[in-house]
Image (tube, rainbow, N blue to C red; front, side):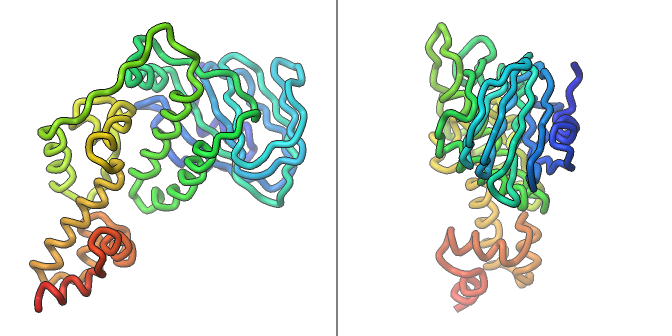
Length: 298
């Protein structure tokens, strides 16, 4: 079955999808978001891959039908999720408890499951447990909500945060809900100083361009899932935060050493606007860009 996740999500929901992350052709991962405005019947069909549906709204009545049998009939709270197993024909009849909400669909392809398994130290692709809105997972719910919020940033050309959050969701699902492996998972190695320097040089070479997680992982000689798993442990911040800090450093050099307008500097180093730079600059230095320039010039 040749699958186009975003097109499938549109057929299931009957709505135009916002493709928060679409790395299907390269890494086997896609995240689609749709608006929910009333009762709806979702026909997922029988998929060859694992899918995860996360409701970001309260559902008054939620009927889950698998292979023509009712599996569950009841309420679903915002943030609960279903892990759809490959090969099962799924239909969902949902009556929301609110006027509008968001539904997040994650498509986890074979290549991603193999990559995540490798990052965990497993020789074979992982498989996820069977779950159907019966688990309260605050971290998953928060990460899903942050992914939705990050989609606004992604539309401005800065997709790194959305990409990072998407991988974080996939890794969290693998860590918490993977079917136990016969062999224990090995921890990923730390990034040595040389690799960290290469990554820093890569980002600083052109801080104004859009940087992806896959590109950073390639510099480190790792898969994206393995990279994101080990980066924060080695460096102390997430890849997205690291890139923001490198861009702030580049902005600081231009603010101190040139007469460029701050708005132009913001765009030159990869921020979407002067205000976007200002927020990041204050968070890193404790000063506004304008005050930093005045203090540097006495």
